[in-house]
Length: 316
Ligand SMILES: Cc1cc2nc3c(=O)[nH]c(=O)nc-3n(C[C@H](O)[C@H](O)[C@H](O)COP(=O)(O)O)c2cc1C
Ligand SMILES: [Fe+2]
Ligand SMILES: [Fe+2]
Image (cartoon, helix red, strand yellow):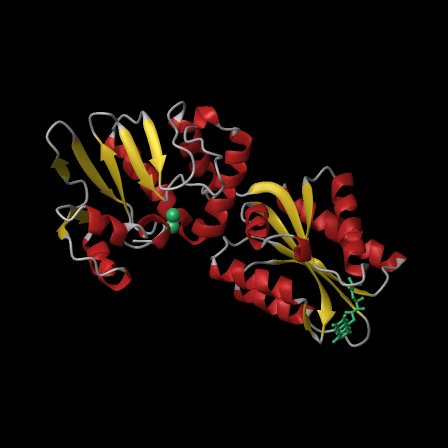
């Protein structure tokens, strides 16, 4: 029932007055609050089949992908899986439709960004849906999600990626997410990056002021260690860092070690709230927490080195 899939429903209902809507019981109930279209309807059970004459549809309920009423539809004779939000992607396709017509590097990025920004909370449901489809033992010649390309050349390309991106196995790499108003905290982020690189750790820095939240989530959701760096802002964390942390919490980011650094001009504050929220998320905080007063000194650099070592150990 999600509007990105169904907004045409009232218009279709005007044209196709004899159509029957087929959906899960939950979708039936939701349809009334979203559209209140009065076509005939039929609610369908999980794995129920419907003969259309020459063609047969099989319905596979896929709860929380990414709404509670979602289902996939399988066209038995042609082996096409209309997978709804599972295996979907962001991104405009410039008039193309199929995987063999599109640069898959763009699709890889946009499907990962879609998955991370929209479905992170429901990663276990993706795993469950993939298992359910595999267990059905059906052939799949084409995967046709609700948005993103239709995969006819290699449907396993997207299925295997969704499987990997939603697995519990975090990647052995670090993402440093920081904010900075005058550049001091950025200096710490870069010093830490350099120290980590010296230790052979794969690391990326993200300046949160210049990066779309969906990209920040994409770059962090599978990172083995996330580092958060905040300047003090009215005795509070930098607002964008705080905003990202509420995303981490709301999207139920998998627990993992988190490292912290912060910068202040006089009294400080903010880093404590960041630490408290990390504790609340039940993620271990990697020591030391690096607190820098404006320009990082030699002693701060030593702390940064210690932190880099501790982070590298966590990834072993
Ligand atoms: C809007 C604003 C509010 C600030 N509030 C505080 C504060 O409450 N306490 C404090 O110690 N420093 C505060 N500062 C100073 C900065 O935290 C400090 O200069 C720090 O070095 C900034 O890091 P940056 O260079 O990475 O931006 C504030 C700065 C700005 C711009
Ligand atoms: Fe959706
Ligand atoms: Fe969607």
